[in-house]
Image (cartoon, rainbow, N blue to C red; front, side, top):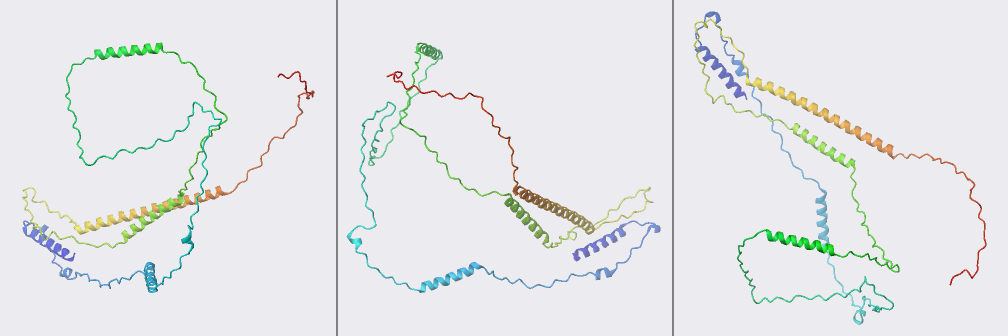
Amino acid sequence: MVQALLTLCIFSIWTILQVVALTPPVSPRFKFKALELNRKILDSVLIPKKPAAKEPTKPEGFDLQIEKRIHDRQVNKKTEEEEHHVFHTQPIPSKLLEEVVGVPRVSQNRQLLPSRKGCVWSARWSPVKAPSPVKSNPMPHFGLPFYPRPSDKSEVEVCPFSFEEREKERRTLKEKRLEDLRNQEVQQFKAQPLPDFHEVHLPKKMVLEPTKPEPFKLQIDERGAAKTDRWERMVKEEQKQKRPFFFKAQPSKVVHKEPFLPKKESHSVLGMNTSTVPEAFELATERRARERQEFEKELSEKETLRACMEERQHQEQEQREKDEVAKMRQDQVHKARPVRHYKPVVLKKSDLPVTVPESPRFSVSCVRL
């Protein structure tokens, strides 16, 4: 950086001297004296000191519980391997050689044979037939190879066609169908027989599937997940902002460019009395510093605006949670219902006449045999 500034100062002084040497003589009224270069400016350049080297970071291992468990497991395994177990045989029981032990005897149930005593076969129901025996297909003979039969190549014969014969056939078929419908006899009504009420046919019982439990979808879990995501994003942004900014100087392109050569202008006779008006120049470092200052100002404004928005959202979320908790507590409070009042029951006397009793008639002559 210092070298670039030195080269820029030397190049500017050299260009000013060339411009002064090449400019035409001007009247002594408009002459100015250039001041000598102050050598103290070049001598007072401060070279930045190299910072002191810090000690390297010494890594330390993690004290994990899994390493302790692995070490304890290996120690226990070694102790178990050292112990030798001696196998002692026991005598076989003599009962196992005499009879079968541990297997229950199968009791043979008496087979019930169906009988047709007093049964009437209905026309709608027929006895169940025994399933027919399954016959397996013969085993193929693998001795000879399989040769597919070639298909006969049939040649298409081209014949003339017309739609008149097809229309005639369609009309004849339609007329024949209409005549069959006219000559068809009307179906007579036949009542179906009454069902047999001695046998009860109940519908099949519908077996419902058991209820499958599902996890609850609570809003507090969704809010917690959203809050953790927002917190992780904020931490990542803060870590990005806390990273040090390393300044990297750009390469100097001025040294490799051609020197500046001013062009001699041809002044007219009328324009000889015009005086040269010097214009202020602006260095690139000043322009970059001004742009950097404006950029940092915009960045700070954006950060303050983002922080205000996040704070406002956080306050709104807290207020919303408080309102939800208050509403839930208010809904959980038990409220007794008031006692209902009904109209009183009024007993009225009936207007119907009193029942007159009559003796029954037990005569035998009235009964029909």
